[in-house]
Image (cartoon, one colour):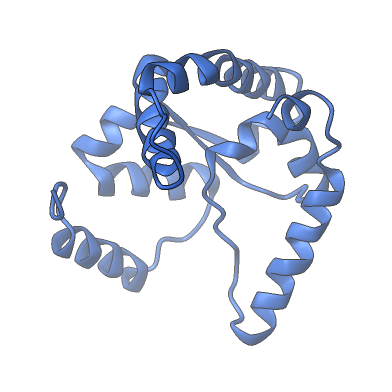
Length: 167
């Protein structure tokens, strides 16, 4: 993890990433790709060099809640392979790395690595309170048309998948 965050050159990984997406798209054409992963926070420079026209939706959430959520996920995954897992140890492993990712993201925004016109900030609480209002704001801010079909599909998904549907 330390090597990945502090020494790895992510450019080859993003080149492969693009090639893999192009391969997938060869059978399923689409106007754009949507890539959702907070892991990109640590490598926005490499991401933007490979995808210079990328539009970034930067979701902001209380970092303490991020640490708790991530620790819970990693704890669950580690328990699949070990009985010796402690969630507090997992959380302390990730705290500094999460702060590093957030710092890198802020720097990428400030120094123009991510151009202002290509980014929109979303507050997690606002998204939870009114997801469709936030989606409309994202599309408007980034200059993308939100078709009636896409709007309807999102509304249907939200109606069929309410929060806590599965516990």
